[in-house]
Image 1: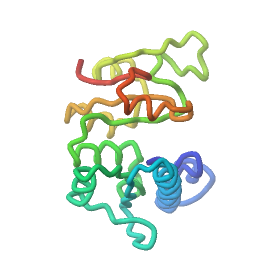
Image 2: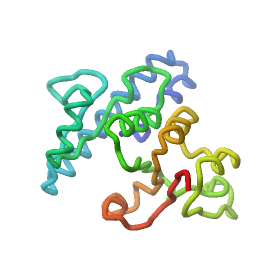
Image 3: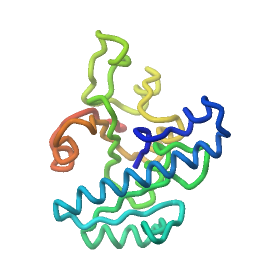
Length: 188
């Protein structure tokens, strides 16, 4: 779970905050979003657990890999919050790391655009959306799908990712139902 809609550590640094302190503030923002998502899912009858890399037992569980896998085996959705619990690592890296740790089949990257484009669609009207791209091609084109650490981890572990617009109503449900929306990044 990201927290950029509330606070981004890198932006805090740009405003004069100590980078590590700003990153911790960003991690707390991810917990707020995770709790909001948990509430929304549970209102739909979906059993959900939030696990945090920063312990806060009254609010959510600590991240414990085996416990997360057990929740998944029981049909629960597990939302990972607080990144890796360490400053200087993005939530992209944390998401990739957690996906690898739980042997996920697919990493979902919800963002504010509906996939990966040949250029930044917010800056270039001629940018074209790609439906499928390889790790190698994304790197070659310098498409900023995720931060380099996250992207490299995904590539090393052959973890495909789906990039989609999280703000589009029903998009998360549609992608979970197997509909082909957004962009898939894989080895091809």
